[in-house]
Length: 456
Image (cartoon, rainbow, N blue to C red; front, side, top):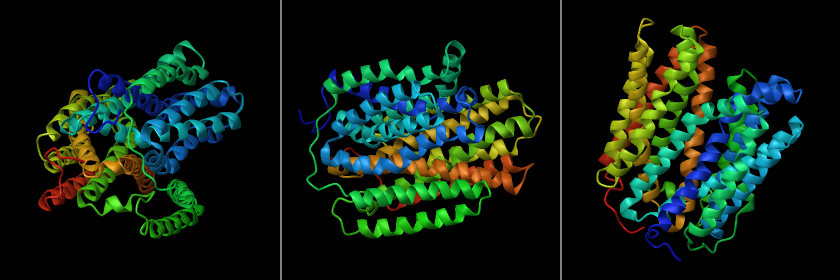
């Protein structure tokens, strides 16, 4: 069945359930390993520094392969790439659970990252073909809700599993969940038309080199390593060659053709700015609460909770509103609220009560949730349906680049000032959120926003 304008019910609900289960696993496994790193390092006789690769290997594999998998989705069909990614992710989870060495676990995490990238790369495209265009904002809101809840419960899920079982069970639980998602996907996901263009292997390798060197270089620079400059320069050179190669192609792996669409380009820039602001806050806030405000670990965990909870509440509401009102206006309002919230966090006195801090954290979550769904809708809806894979891949890449930029800037802030680093990072986050608001305002003034439902 060709999903020309969404799937009928109840098949639509089974399809979104399969997508939600897969995304939940991919997001959770990007975070739960952090909690278990000390236990894993002890069990595998690895140093803390070496054990960090259990996290980095997964993240790097995801970043360098999202756009190639998105291109494969256009060529082979989004359903096939999603199912293949889900199968690889599930089997790699079993390999993680049965690993007995740091090298074996790291290699399994690389495979797991490739599976997660395949899922994430075509996730948005599948959502677009699962729901009718008039309900696209609602569908994206549901997707944002799943991501927000998964991010919020990640540490809690990891702590609960580790309280009852050893660390391999963090990965073993993906076997029944992945099997259920595969069964649902095989019966419910939409079939889509395929693009006849061949896969561009040289561009895929250049993409991996550019993004890999850029991220490694940025992280090395933030740690004070001079080698980071060479890696960063190499990434920029590879990126320049990659973009030059893509300009002459009808269906480029890096969607430079979509970046010529103003609505899409504005949405990508706004997304990078907003996710940079979010990551600047998420990485610096635990240090801010404990080192600056003198709160304990338990209270810090509780104070971090209102933000993702507010995102989970606002994302589906904002998604529904985006089906009726200008996404540019909604994004601008959300970014302004986020900027105000981050500025308030940086300016609050050390005597601020936990209730006041919790309210400001919720305000930040409301702003980010109000931005995310409309912006994703504008990004996806502005691309031709035949390029949904490229649009979804770019959406995920913009999010990951923003998060990488934010985390790197936190490290620079801490190096710039040991005592005021967290406050400086929050101030930078407020600036990035304000920049996102400016970009959204420019998009509205140029009337490039996707507003009313229209054929893809």
